[in-house]
Length: 500
Ligand code: ADP
Ligand code: MG
Image (tube, rainbow, N blue to C red; front, side, top):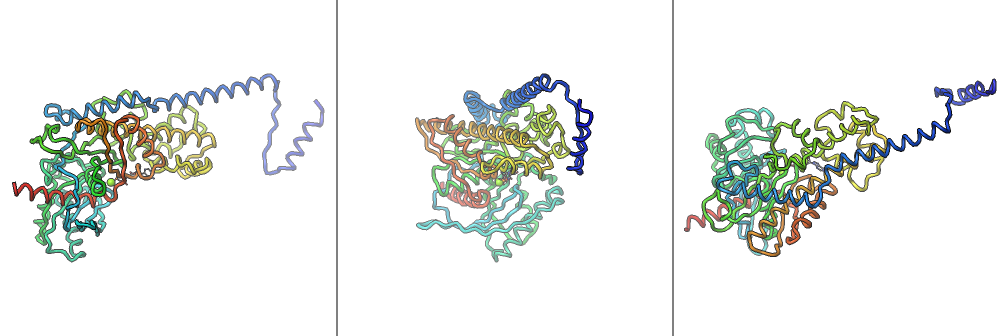
């Protein structure tokens, strides 16, 4: 009401902070309407918190739900092993023809190839038995150019043979005719230790004329074409099996292999009498479960969320590998990204602005989950990580993002644990035991580097399989050392068969 008051106040402020543009707005009934406003904001925040909690609640599985997942995995295992059910089964339970774990008597020099990870490697592995068992390894990494990965099968295998040739020259071993193990981390239908028919390429490989072919035969033909050296291809090896064998060499109770990396898969020693897809009832054989495909018949649809479905729909193999898409490194970040988009659309995050970055598929890598969930990280650092991703966050945003990441990785570890619980209990029942002590060999960057994944997984196995004591052992180079050990065991098996 004072004729000069307002004008003087404005002028003073402008003079004191000339770099700021300050506007003055008259409030109408600040105490009455204001009180209502404060209440409304509190309501909105409470409602927002409730809605976010509701969204994340779908990812929180009760013990009963986890037991149900374990039970369903058991059913699918049975289907994969059964003669009449195998053909239609989603969890394929592929026989590997590895009939025993190493016993320490393995001895000799072996070559190993590792194809299917990020790099192609050729290795020389010297295994010595006796009082002081040792394993010495030499390896060389080779690039596989994209045009070779996606050229003809003949070009791909010529390149592989060229690399082996280079490696043998480098080691001065051209004339040795060594036994070789071929780690080939793609789904393969095996009919013996040294025969594996490629079901389908994955991970960016697309070479023609390989699917439906025996990859060992393709390798042998390549070696023949080169006419420079001879090799004895003894085994084709899945990375889960290599992982199990590497750990079993150090720890004889290791009869399970687990991969939690780009993908998710497991193998274990099953009784021959239960493997109806292979003749014979005596002893055991390692089965490559290919458990990533669990749920492809719809049996997990009741626990899958709309975000899981979105990730699946945007993937290269829609409808396939549904379990893997809930628990492996390639997909966890994508699940998080889809939740963040939804929360932003609903106005709970990033001021409701969906940035271009957030729309980019694959931008939210699983390694960021590891960083964001690290207990040593302050919220400010979480904001710095989001900033690097081009996401401008408030402090409240960063709290929500951290909660979303934790929820997604927690569920991943739990359902992986539920699958593992199904395996250990099956092995315990196979052996008619009340209590089982067993070791799992594990490989994979998600398991190794995520701050909570391994701990939650262990805890889940403990709760869901209380009659088993399960130890987890990290594998060291399962695809290289493991392949050599399988080759050594294979050579021993072959000698025994020749004697019989
Ligand atoms: P692969 O499974 O291809 O043989 P790895 O076991 O090294 O190879 O797994 C690689 C995958 O691990 C990547 O695709 C990524 O999803 C995930 N990953 C990479 N870094 C991390 C990390 N720091 N924390 C969790 N997961 C990670
Ligand atoms: Mg690997």
